[in-house]
Image 1: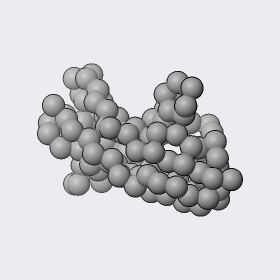
Image 2: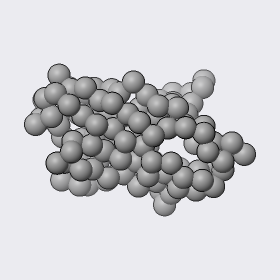
Image 3: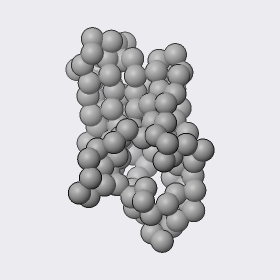
Length: 116
């Protein structure tokens, strides 16, 4: 079992920045990939960014150049630095982790609202 606790969401004006954090606990020795997804009202959940245990990153085209995912393996924490935020970035952001066994876990979600 893995527990994920997210923090850092909130309300920000367009062009502003936010930093999301997700701390993992539990069977953390088996974590492979950590990532962030988001879901806007009426839309499907989509991948925002992911990072492997080796540091390889992957980003959605819509956030490339604006968002940066990073990972502190010592703290079992993944971060999402979001700059130049746009109203279309408004969504509930979910932390996700994929274990080496192939099993995945989700955090409870944190709301990010970008006003125009």
